[in-house]
Image (tube, rainbow, N blue to C red):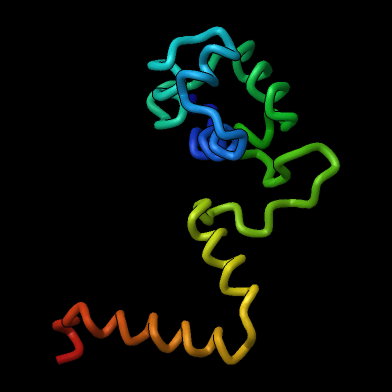
Length: 122
């Protein structure tokens, strides 16, 4: 039975700390290859490693298993659990601009969509 381990969440937590897979693997006492496979979802960590990862990142095993969207004990739920770190950065940057600038950015993105030559609309 699949545990539902969320390798993408592990990768996000690792990257937020500025660690490479090698650095993280060394901290936990596993190989870089294992860390890579956890993040890609090709293998699941053992219960002991899962607990070590949760403790290291001050998160819960439920968060790493996808059973909760709350990344840290006592924290608010992640309002956008499906967004990538790049998408979150883009959203934060977008929100930092005035409403007029936001409208211009949206217009530019919509114009870019038309550049692709959507054959269904022709």
